[in-house]
Each structure stands twice: as C-alpha cells, then as structure tokens.
Image (cartoon, rainbow, N blue to C red):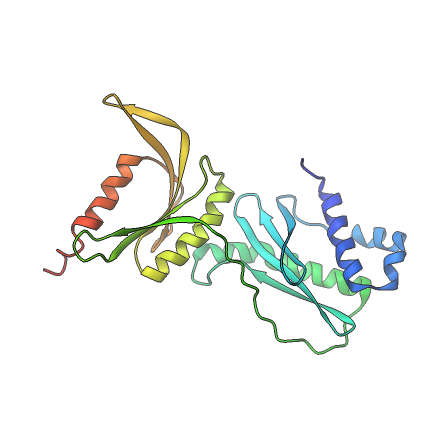
Length: 237
C-alpha cells in the first residue's frame, strides 16, 4: 500500500522525536507546525532496518537505495549519522549523493530547529555492516582458472531501482576482481529462435565502464562472455 508523503514525513519525525526523548514530543501542535516545514522528495521513501542502533534506509524510485541514517545515544543527546550508499569510485554514487545530501542537511537542520543543538562531543562512528546476500557467478578462464568476468543475478523482471541496487554489488565485485561485471535480470517472456526458447534478459554493465540498461538475449550475452573465456590466456602469447 502506498502511503502519502505527508504521512511518511510525520512518521519519521515522530520516530526521531521519541528517540530524542524531549518534552516537546508531548506538544503535538508544535510538532505538527514543524512537520509542515519538512518534507521528503516525492520519489524518495524510507524504511527501518534491523540493526544494533536505529537505522533508516532511504530509497529513490529510480536509483534504489541512496543513503542511510543511523541514530545512537550520546549521553543525553542523540547523534545522527548520515551516509551515502555505494563505493566512492562508483559513478552512480555522485548521483545518490546529489539527492541524499540535501535530504540529510534538511533533516539535521529540522531536528535542531525542533530540539536544539546537542552539547555532547561527537562520538567516533563506524559504519555498521550492511551485507546484502545476492547470487553471483565468476566466469573463469578455461585454461588458467582466472576470473575474467563477474555476473550478478537480480530477481526476475527487476525494476530499474532493483537493478541499481544490484549494480552496486556488481561494481564492488568487478572492482575487486578487476574484470568486466554485469547485472542480469531474466524477463518472464522468452524468444523462440530456430525452434529453441532463448531467455530474454535485462542487462546492465557496471564495470569497468558504466552502461545503460539493455535488453539482450541469453545467447547474445554468451557471445560477449565466450571470447573473454577463450582468449584470456592467448593475449599474452
């Protein structure tokens, strides 16, 4: 069920208000007045994640997860930590930062306007581990058993936002192995070629260069991967 933007904003503000444990929380009218000054972009939503500290992930309808807010107690104060999601070398990280940066600044300014500035010194902060399971495959050289490509499998019929979520993981793996990396999502419809059903894919190359999402048949992807496998060891000969 889709929730109205004003309701989302109010819920988030009230959650933060309870964490601050400030007497102003009981002043519903003042909070209502302040909520009118704060809003998220209509294409951005948030959800709570399970973690040791209160953790909220912000999601863009086209870019997927873009940033997170972690809240932990610092004496009598609550400390807000905002992070943009993604590898700093990933070209999409700048796009996520351009959207989440203003949100984080607006939220921080908003909370200070309601509850005032904290007095405790900032604590050192370590990013909580947010490992997300995914299915991936290393494509290996047929002779030397070296990784020559990496595939990340997104859910079938993935949306653009979901592809972007998996693209972050594909970028990290491509960077780790220093090989071309793709995100792949199999579509529900296949294509019949020479009386043979061939899966139809959505593909997104994410490393070393970033490309746009492309429809592709499975055999077309094989035509790209097979030379990487067959000619890897021949390049140095």
